Image (cartoon, rainbow, N blue to C red; front, side):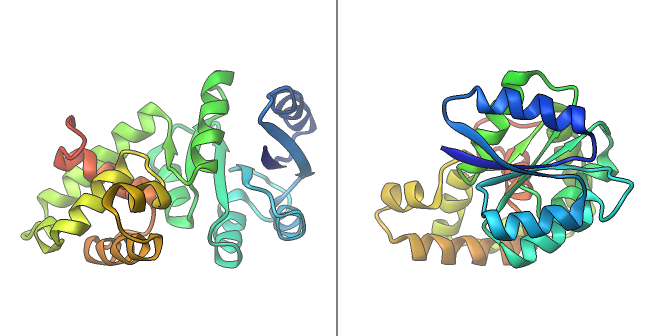
Length: 217
C-alpha cells in the first residue's frame, strides 16, 4: 500500500485526488496540507511514501521550497510535483530541489496513477513534454562541453547508469549484477559525482541522450 500525503492549497483538488487515490487498491491518502510548512510537518510525522506537492501555493511556503527542505530532512522521500505550468524553468527548478517527478494537473488519471507508482518504487517520472525539454537542454549543455564525462565512468558504473535509467531499483540492479545493494549505491554515487548530477531524472535524460536505452533524440 502506497501511503500518500497531499499538499495543495485548493480544497477541491485535494478532495478529488483523495477520492481517486483511495479508490485505487494499492494507494491510500494518509494526510493533507494546504501549504509547504504544514506539508513539511505532516510529512515528518506521518512518514508517507509519496508526497504530491502543488508547485504554486501563494500562502505559506511554496512547493519548490518545501520540496528542497523535505529532501534535506528525508532524503529517501519521493515527491511528485503537481503543476499547471508546462514550462522548462519550473521543471528544472523542481528537479534541482530534489523532486522525484513532475506531472501536469491536466494529465489523465491513469498517468497520475502511473507516476505515483513509479516514484514510489524509487524511479523518476516526467511527463512526455518535460522529458523532451530535459533531453534537449542536456544536448545543448553537452555540445558546449569539450570533454564527455561519460569517458570518466568505469565499465561497472556505465552498467549501473544504464540499469538506473531503465527504471530498475538498487536491489534489482544488485541482483542482476551479482553485487550488494551497498556496492550499487557506491557506484551510483561515484557516477553521479563524475557526471555532476544529483537526481534520477537527470541520469535518465543523460542516458537517453547517450543512446544507452536503445533510443534517443
